Image (tube, rainbow, N blue to C red; front, side):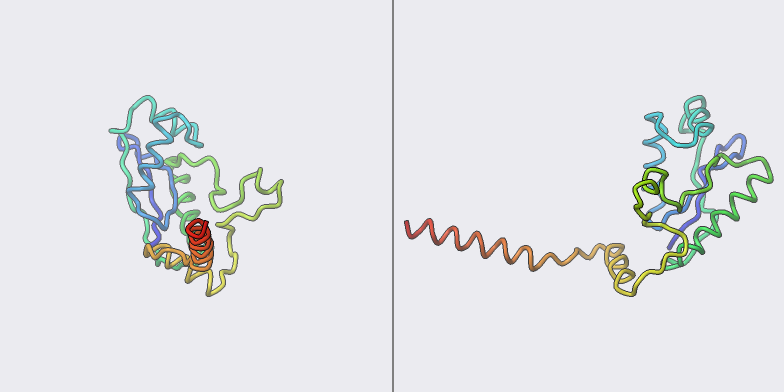
Amino acid sequence: MAVIYGLVHVASGRTYVGCTAGKLQKRFREHRCLLNNNKHKEPVLQKEWSIYGSEAFRIEILEQLEMLAPTFRKREAELRWMTKLESEGLLYNLSRVSFAPSPEAARKGIEASRTVGRPVSPEGRLKRRMAQLGIPKNHGAKISATKRRNRILRQSDEIV
C-alpha cells in the first residue's frame, strides 16, 4: 500500500507531506535521523524540530493508495494534500518536486527513478513487486560461474 503521510507538529498542526510505498515507520525513522543530525532538506521543519524535539511531532497517514498506483497518481495525491495544507497555512514543504530528478541528476542527464508518468514495463513491475515481497534477485548465472571457477581452481590445486 502506498501512503501519503504527514509529519505533524502536534501543537501547531504544521505538516510536512511525503509519499512512501515502503513501511511508514521506516520512513519516519529516516526523517528522524535526518532531523536529529540537522540534515533535513526542509529548513523550517528542521528549525522547529531542533527547538521542540522529537516528542512534539507525530506521523499520520493522510491517504492510502493501491501499491501499484502509477507514479502520477501518487504525485497528484501528494500535491492535493500540499495545496490543502498550504491554503490553511500549515505546510512545511518549501519544495514541491519530490518526484523530480535532483538538479545534479538533471545536469548529468540522469533520469530520476520516480519521474512523473514514466511508463513501467510489465517486467519492471514484476521486479519491483518481487523486491517488495522480499524475493531475492536471481544471480544464478553469476553465482554458477563463480562456483565453477572455484571448483576448477580447487581441482588444479589437488593435482599439483
